[in-house]
Length: 242
Length: 238
Image (tube, rainbow over all chains, first blue to last red; front, side, top):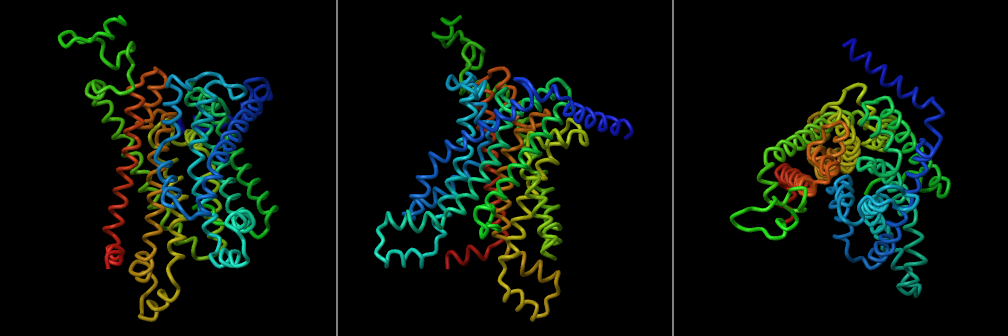
């Protein structure tokens, strides 16, 4: 018991020691650089997923078609571990581990895996958001003589926006969290601090990396909520999951 | 050597499809030769996932009952759960290591915490979905609080709770792979080894088994739900 306690204190002490050393924060392999890289890759992957998923999902919601697919795609996506998908992409001939611009080693594979991860919840959220526009509102818009397109752009889209925004905020936090996994295939991002620490039995370093990753996730979550509440005070208590 | 691989003959077998020279994605010989390794990893994956989900259910239930006693308690419980869920798995496991070490316990505890957050929300949502007039009628019939909970509220909340259980189960099976970080990730260990040694047959087999396991456990939960709520089926057919 005493021994375990001693190890515990050591690991946590080493972790804070690692964080307290400014040398670990600067430089091309420092915490700041890796943090920026992971943010960049998370935002890019989310952007890709939005570009691909949002128009289709919103339009399907407008048509009221493909609901079964739009809702169940999230369940299918959940069953596929992002780690497994990433591993397959990295070992395949393409995209492999090739360095990709500022995204670093295995950058393209990471982007694809993360975008694929973010796509299902975005589709489900956007579809549900449009479908939740009350039928009376839709009918009165039609009664006023709006065409299908006008109904979509002037009524459904504005009313669906808060819920779509909630979906994007949740997706950003989840993509950030999942991007950490790229380090398991020696990819980009802050997860590398964690995996390096564990690979070299420097658990203090591993725990230090975990603390930073968790802290940024909490900041993103809280910041997103605040931003959304500020932009739309009525939407403070939106349902957070589909 | 490439010649040998290119011209396989029936009498003299060339290099196996999982040798380093061939490195096929799909290789039945690998599945046969490494059967025991695959079974062991699948078994570890299965028990880690199941124990984590069961632990999550056991802790979530009293927490949900506690949380619905007051709005402030509910905000505290749901807020803490959301915060926990925000922490990436690759960060949560290391944060647990100082307490539980490099062990399967670390993975089970971490995954149970994630399940907990999904399940507490589902339970609160399910219990809230029970119509007020139903609980009032039951109370009027003389149901004491405990009996009301187990005979009226829980059965009616069950569909929503089971939906949450399905989400928790499937995502737990997927997240177990990340346990490879602390060398206890079930099939995740094989994925890690497959990446490390560029072993395609091992990697693909582990990925496919992992998805199959998720689908299988999902079906088990759906089956449980059907057995537990026979009236929903009667309503469908009638």
